[in-house]
Image (cartoon, helix red, strand yellow):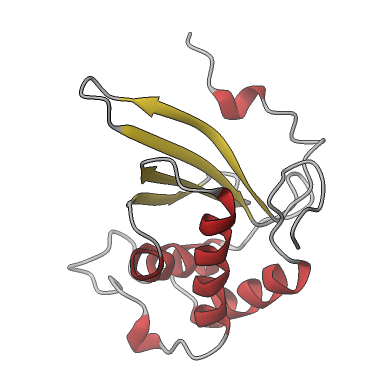
Length: 157
């Protein structure tokens, strides 16, 4: 079986919340695709409840695209401690953190249910499993802790 980078990461050594560049892949035409570990909760010490995580996912999928160019996808980890963020190019971690911070500030603050995209049966495969209240509370908690530019030390918080 192929090695998967996230399974080789020492999850006991990281200090969440943080953004970490996992790696950059180059396509056959030279296009760069960056994969980021966007970790909101300390691994093995907690997790974001599914409904809140789902609402954060849907909202960040939209608002991140308004705040930084090149977003391909943001998808939650199965462990519910954060997200993979896949982007075109090689954006600076500080720029990614700034966009994520702005997105979480929107969720924690003025976001209303009408701002959460894709929450009907037509648009979502599990539309009943959302919670804006949970998304707001978790966004506030993450922002209070600060998002580090380094996975192993509190940098730029």
